[in-house]
Each structure stands twice: as C-alpha cells, then as structure tokens.
Image (cartoon, rainbow, N blue to C red; front, side):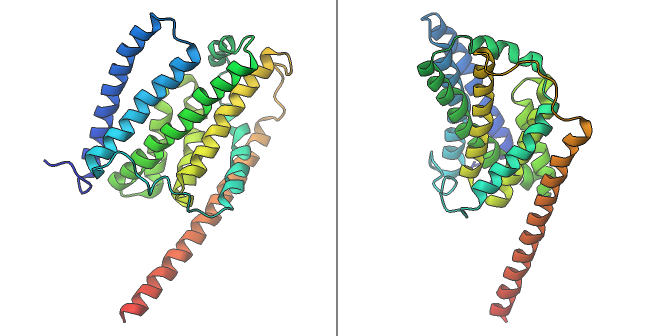
Length: 269
C-alpha cells in the first residue's frame, strides 16, 4: 500500500505510533551515550522532546504529505479573540486539574529546581515549557487528534480519546486525570480555533506555571503543602463555566456551518 495523504486514518495512526516508538528507542540509546559525557539535565529534557516528538512529526509529514513541514498547520491566521478566551479557559481549568494532581509526583521535579540559578531557570523554561508545547501540540493535536476524529467518525469522541492518549503518553498514571483534563481543553481549543498557536500558548503557560511554582516553593516564596483554597463544590463551578462556554461555541459553529451550506445550495440553485 502506498502511503499518501489519502491513506486511511488507521494506517496513519499506526504509522505515527511506529515512528514514535522508533524515535523513543533511538533517543533512549543516544541519550544513554550522551549521559556518559555529563550532559546537563535541562539539555537532556529538551533533546529528548525534540527527538521523540519533533522527529516523529517531521517523518510523518514527509511520509503522508511529501514535505517535512506543514505551513498551513502553523499559520497565524486566526481570530485574535481566541488568545484571551483560551487564557480565560485555561485559568478556569487550573483548579479543576489541580484537584486531581498527585503532589508526590512533583518530588523529582522539586529536586531538579533546587537552588536553580536564574540563567538555568531560563534554560529550563525553554526546554521544559516552550519545546514540549510546540512539538507535543504538533503531534497530539495537529496530527493525532485529526486522525482519531476521522477514524471514530465522531468529533467529540475523537477529542476525548486523543486527550486520553495525550495523558497516557506521559507515563504517569497518578496524574492521568489531571493531564486528561488539560488534553481535553487543548483538544477543544484546537477543534474550534483551528489554530495550533492558540494551543501552543496554553500548553506553554501550563508548563511555565508549573516551573515557576516549583521554583517559588524552593525559594520559600510560597508554601508547598498549603491547604486547598476551595472545597470540592467550588471546584465544580469552573467546570460548569467551561462547559457552558464550549456549548455556546458549538452552537455558534453549528449556525455558521448551516449558513455556509445554505449559501452554497443557493449558489448551486
């Protein structure tokens, strides 16, 4: 079978999985060699992300589209209001995702940011916030979600499954629900905004907030084990607002689609 843009979604997904596995194995072997040279942890994390996700995306694009880079996917053509809207939705989601987080999983990261200098902190922001935001969104929303939706033949089911796969890909079951909620938000944002840059912005802010929080805790600027600010009921309120927002967006999208179909039928008539 010739692999091209018209290949089935299942073939594309299996190819993406195969390419990712090869990249993971290759990066593990190469990283094992580099660790012998005393490579910096920040550089190691950035290198691993680029090699695993970046290479996978580039190879996938080359196989199915005949080119390494998809200019249309990274187009800046999107409505400006999506950025503040995405920021608001992200802020609403934070307490929901935080409620399901496992604090024990932050212990290793906390050690990573112990007595970190400002210069090294900037390096961590680049390798742990910006690079993952770009390449993970490229793979999970720009490639995987599109194919999962096509395979399921149901947009929202495809978004849910993609969010679950996004969370599982981090190999941290203790924080599965927390990352699933973030993946769900990112999936819905990409579905409605059609902009990978909106997703990259939100993903970057999520990673950045975690880095700054861990750094602040290490420097004694905030309490690591403070009490929850809200009880369980209050955590439901942001979810309600987020749900209503996407209901409005879905209704608006339906109206625009019906209007386009009406105008098209009128032109054909």
